[in-house]
Image (cartoon, rainbow, N blue to C red):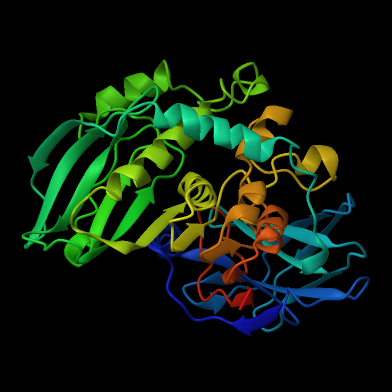
Length: 413
């Protein structure tokens, strides 16, 4: 694997999330390792340097408690006091392929402050469990079922785009089960076969799609919601769904005992149908088909690229539900996933990765244990295409540490 320090740009789904965390941090931990955190060797000492920061200055005399956990099942704890002149040094190691996680906590002016970071060894040796033997047969059957439903526009209503020169429509597309529901935007008066297309997916939430008008100034942009529900409704509409039919969706273990009753099943059918529909648009250039999203949107992007060979670029960020069986089968640190069942393996992006043929670029946090870095690495290792993944130190699923260092691995070139 090639490694380099990255100063890059997040795809749309991740930049907002991380920038928000950075903007809100007036008191924070700054934490780095003594070398590239992706390049430690088994048993090598990893040194984390931590400082408690306020208004850009290191604070003196702050009590800090820390916990080290890891994919090796070991736990270490300790206490320290911050210094304005020297960082707190915390040392650990790991001997098996995987990551260590370091969490530090302090209180400053009544505010709780946390650091979440990590480092790993033998990243290219991190493996997941075997995939279902009938994985391809299962998805061939689902594609056949979907093909029996015509690609039919149920509703197309023009809505204000908010961007000069861009037209936007609230769309409903017929699908097996709930329809595809989203906003389709593109330049006004676009010529036939003139535009690349991008299908965008949203994170875990009970919301409608957002208008992708800004991104559509030079391309077709179709953002769908995960559920096939209405877009652009009063908040109470979404609140009611969140209280009732979509409460904790995808986490129902009884539904997840069978892949065809799992909530992810309908989600996968809708993303496939969204791609099928976009490819019927006369403005599409017939070549460039991009998928993008963050968290659950990253999950959907990976499935989309694995299930549709026409996808030419995939941008999944802080992707959800990678290696869902990891804590059960391999003792990995767990993420915030539905309780694993064998049926969920049909939707696990680490297995869909093996079917992706296009370029994949992703961003992840070394302190993200909603979507742990071990699963991200298994996904990367399973890709057999041009690929790039950037790890950001001190970043979680909803927070970007100010001035965080970033490290990129590449492959498949």
